[in-house]
Image 1 (spheres, rainbow, N blue to C red):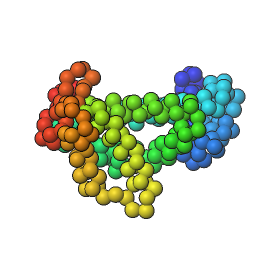
Image 2 (cartoon, rainbow, N blue to C red; image 1 turned 135 degrees about the vertical axis):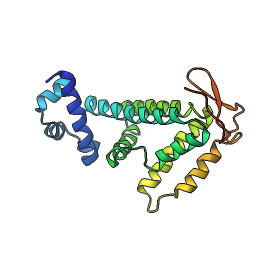
Image 3 (cartoon, rainbow, N blue to C red; image 1 turned 90 degrees about the vertical axis):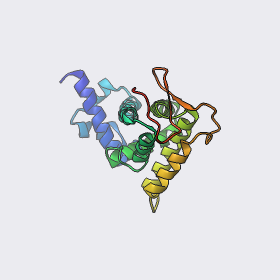
Length: 206
């Protein structure tokens, strides 16, 4: 089996084990059994368990970020951009419950370890980069924090927030002056800007 396939097999197995047992229960032995690989093969590709778990979390966050970038690029105006944010909060972007469990495990590890915190910071930067395709920079930062908090409340709370309430809040956050930001346009990667404050405005092609 090619080395890249073996590495991916180990990372895929790590996802399953972390989702079921948490990071603290993600041992070489459990991951090797899930991957149907020998522990020795695992340690050859990942000398420490943290090497394997960090690789899994990096790939996981890249996958989620890529999907969010795609959604934000597909939005033609601020209304569609806000809708994409609401979809993420309401669980229509996350592929599975296991993905949410992985994110919670990463939050916990990031609070304790600089290496995992670096993965978390990179994920935040990727998320805010996607949001800046449609929103002002300060609004993007605030939305990113709002997405994290509301998602956790919706998953772990006794009663999820109504979608209509989330939609109204996200739309209000996109209005000019909400963040005290004087800039009216969202900065795009190609240097162009779009007025993300007007729900009926049309964003330029990306």
